[in-house]
Image (cartoon, rainbow, N blue to C red):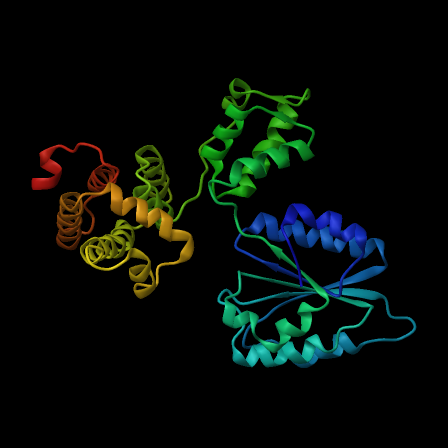
Length: 343
């Protein structure tokens, strides 16, 4: 299995088409652009028919199999796009995919689209069969740390000269929303034909369209980044996120931190991470938060969170965004007015 990022795909396509391409990830722009690039390369090599199926319980697998086996002297080469379910294929679907993977031939190019697969799903027979002659493209939305590099590469590909400050502003305004970011770069290229994108020029044309989840907010709190946490909170509020979901997400993290804080006095942190099944890519961040946050802060945060939940239960329509901002500042090690903590 060849594993690539979308920006590496075009170079691979120039080397020659593989039998199958697995486009896996959560980013609509990266998924669509990768599919378009593959279809364009395939069309140039005589793949004139393009078919697409969304896999679900009502999928007509016999029609799919017939399509794969339709070979004649006059049949044109064809591409077949299969959209996996949101949670990946189930056991029954895995069996059908295993059958289909054995029907591939030189005049049929398979493109599978879906979310990132779990390790268990990658052990399915259809996946292992395709692995020998396929390319997997990771279409995950870049995280905050990787986004500036992605933006710089995108700008360079469009012959745009983007300075660092302008890059930072674009990342701030469009994190988690690559489609809007790509559209912003297109708009800027039209506004400034000389291609020189300085901070003042970019400021005139951007709007805050970043997209976040509650997990981004919690991660910002763990890292003690108050400005980022408040920015995320503002965007979540504008998108109509439910405060109760934010509270529940933070509650799980606070309980984990308190347990780790208490148990780490007599048990190595690595052992505790294994016990509580903390993901490897979160361990350094949680370890830093444990060193930074005092037990008193954690207790105060739990008190404020509990009181906020009670407020919501008593009057679901009451706004608690001020309390969520207070929680953000408290966990980012900022001084809080007593009214937030003591009620």
